[in-house]
Length: 264
Image (cartoon, rainbow, N blue to C red; front, side):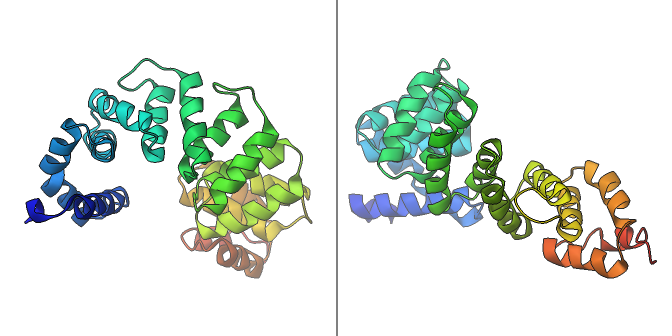
């Protein structure tokens, strides 16, 4: 039945299945496997869109990095942004090819200029840490802001970190106070916000949000949140502890920390 699809229909079906598979939807992986022989056939025939798809499957699912490089390189030369981004990733990590951060940055730039949000994120992180490019907090912030606006959730963590390094505590705290309760923040971001709330950086001191951050750290497997949470909860009322849990949308540690509240 799949062989009866036109090229545009097959391309649309394959791209949709790839997106679903990357989201962890089993049916997406099943659809990819069902049409993989057709994808492979068209890729081997030199069709750049299907070269990208074959490379993406090799990278994301098969973990065959040499195969991924073999297909993604010509697709990137055909200026397919997602192929440029994926090839950049291989080069930045030295997967299936010798590590080359400079070329990775060039590929990320090309994909970012074409509107690829993940490429903006990756390039922004390179500017943040000075990997393959001269470090620039300003350029990192610009790219990470665009990536965040494009819906790349992880970018907000790095954007807040960049703003914190620029001592833009207001900007960093605004981002962190949004992403910590949303469940998008990493344990490091939750820790950073806890410190900012504890010392009154970027806003007033706020024990409720500080404790909520320690609860989030525990949710994310960072045990450091337990000691800090116990200490802070002992200075708070039961009501404040419950407010912290409600703000952080974290219930798992409420009863444990309530036992340490000063009015227990």
